[in-house]
Each structure stands twice: as C-alpha cells, then as structure tokens.
Image (cartoon, rainbow, N blue to C red; front, side):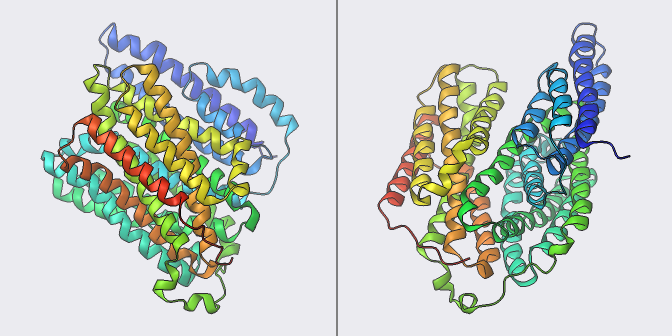
Length: 485
C-alpha cells in the first residue's frame, strides 16, 4: 500500500524540524561559543539536503491532496520557524483523515514548474556576486556576470514564444526543464571568470525557455472567466519563490558552497522533468489551431492591450531592480544590519502571497484589468517614494507591505490583460516577448539608477514618480477589448 502524501509530508517535516533545531540549538552554539566551526558546516549541509526532500514532499502533497493552497504555504512557512513543523504536524494528521486524494493536478504541476523557474532565479540573488568574486572576477566583471543572466534570458524568452506557437508548450517545457537543470550543474566547473561568463550565458538562455511555455500552457487550458484568479494563483508560486529562494541559497551557501546550492535546485528540476514527462505527455498535441488571427501582421499583434501588458512587465521588474539595488544601500546608510534588507524583501513577498491566495484574488475577474493594473503600479510607485523617506524599521516594514500589495495587484493584471488581448494561437509569442520585457526590466532597473547621478533618496523618488506617471497613463487610456481565446 502506498504511503499517503500527507504522511510523507509529515515524516519529511519532522526530520526538517529536527535538523533545524540541531542546527540552531547545537551546531551554532558549538561554533560561536566553543569555536567548533565544522559543526555548522556539517549540520547545515544535512539540513539543506533534508529541506530539499521536504520541499519535494510539499510539492507532491499539493499535487495529490484535495486541499487549498494555504496548506502548502503553511508547510513552507513552518520550515523557517523553530518548532514550526512540530506545531503543524497534529493539524496535518487530522487533515490526512479529512482530505481525499485526487489524480495528479495538471494545473498545480504547471504552477510548480513556474515556481522552479523563479526559485532558480531568486536563489541566485544573494550568492552570485560573492561567487563571481571568489573565482577571481573584478568588480566590473561581477556586475557584468549578474546582468548577463537576464540579458541571455531575454533571447531564451523570445525563442520559447516562437517555438511554443509552432510546436506546442509541452515540448518547449520539457526541453527548458532538462536543459536548465543540466546548466545548473555547470557551476561546478566555473573556476575562473571566463568559464563563469559562459555558464551564465548558457544558464540564462535555457532557463528563458520555461516560463513563456508554462504560462501559455496555463492560459490555454483555463476557462475565460477565471483567467484573473488563475493568474493570481500563479503569482502565489512566484511570490513563494521570492521568499524561499534567497533565504535557502543564502543559508546553504554559507554552510556548503554555491555550486552545491545550484545542485540542490537542479535535483528539483530533474524531478519535475520526470514528473512532467509522465503526466503532461497527453497534452503533447496541445497547440492552437491556425485561424485568421494567426495571420495578423506584426503591427496588428502589438495592440494597445499587449503594449500595456509589456510595459507593465517592464516597469514591474524595473521597480524590482531598483529595490534590489537601492534598498540594501538605504538600510546600510541608516545604520541597520544588512540582514534587515532580506527580511524586508520577504515581507513584501509574504504580503503579495496573501493577496494572491485569499478571496481577494477574485477581484482580478470582477474588475477591469486596466484598473487593477493602475492600482498596482500606483501602490508600488507610492511605496518607492516613501522608502527613501523612511528611517525606522517599522516604517520600512509598512512601506514594503504597501509595495507587496502593489506587486500582488500588478502581476495578475498584466497577465490577464495579455491573455485577453491575444488570440490563443499567438499567445506563445506574446508570452515570449512579455518575459523578455521582464528580463530587460531587471537589467534596466539596477543599471539606469547606477548611471544617473542620484542619491539613494533621489533614486527612490525618481522611480516612484516614473511609476505614478505610468499608472496615470493606464487610467486615462482606453481599455483593450479581448482579442479572442
């Protein structure tokens, strides 16, 4: 008899909880009180390996159990709280008897693929600059290496969109998952700057194949009047990746090595590749039939709804790039510990996830996408203006909470707007360009503010004003009518 998914989750959770307590309660005192440094390295490596198993158990339970997404979210949160797994275990035991099983959810499997792609991205943020420096890269090359991933990712996004429309999303997803997982293993060979640059180009390009194909698959298998809600739920997995990725890689890299961190991510990718090959294969022929819409000219494809969605994607990630660049500097200038930057970024992610999973996600199917998009951009712009003026930890947490609300409103809105403004046979190409603008926004956000002669406060103010102007533009322009499904 097969073990129940929740039972497997409970066992993995208890092991994860024990390893966390050993790390915090035994290994860390051994290091910081008695000087036994190896204790943390050993315990940290063991805890990291168990956490990967626990994350896979959460994924499997989410795919097989008939429960809400709040359960997997609670399980992930418990992993970062001492005794959290033990508090959650009795509730999971009751849930095991309460919730039935279901066939593997294709929707949640696609969500998991989206999570993997963004987890891969966000896990790089805390460790890539130090890793590049450790292999002998100069300060200029370090910055170049970081931006190179997003730049090559742009080309992967565009190619993914074209291939998805031509061959269907399944083949592109499988290729992207396998090649990205393989590329993550190449960091073991990056022992000098030139090799690291080559690895970053390969990694960025092949990882760009995943997201456009995944979002196209999701959009083309969703009922029209639930597109907004589904986009919000997809955003949940992006938000979880933003919360978990940096924390996981930062902790694991300090205890082991950066290549080992990427190997752990690669293992998750290979597992998803195998699961996808088994359960998504029946959708291998999922490809929109050609129609008159497929013969649209390039100018016809870029209608006002598509352009707004692309611009929204660019400004969303432009704002993220500015935040990643300026927030640590602002926190440091206020005299706070650098760890505050990480917890602030987690705060905005947690708020966004709550908006995504709570009944608030219904707003995206009941209110015009242009209005929720403008609200999201407006909240993010207001937050950017206020960050530069905030000098206390409480104020910073409140302002990042506002930013999280804006992010939560903007992400589903631009996805829904894109879906409604494009016919299904052109949706792969649309998402290819869409995520190319995502990648370009990341590069522009950090680089433009680095070039301009602004102080930290002026940089935040400039970004906030830019976002508010764009929000006003969205409000006062005509909403695009759906282009067909």
